[in-house]
Length: 135
Image (cartoon, rainbow, N blue to C red; front, side, top):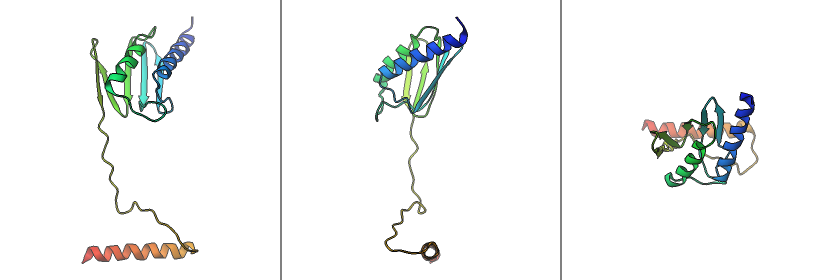
């Protein structure tokens, strides 16, 4: 059996396990190479949900039990996952706080105007804000 065929089979089995555990495969990528199954991206529940530590453990155990898989390696945006050979160390990654600045605004155009008129209005609004800051 060729290595390429074996790799294809393990990837297919990994996809079956991920699907069985309702993993959103549009946000998680995986690939088997050598004896390692690599998982990277975001580990979300399908269709729109999050996993918990207790729901991840069975998933990880099933992946680790796949034939030919000796190691699991993770590069996930939302979880830190490590194995110390006897148990899983799983913790959610802290998400950075979202900050919105004054430049993040939605403008609603209520009347027909040319692009020049709109840009002039925005420019005037910006200068008015700058004037207030100077005072």
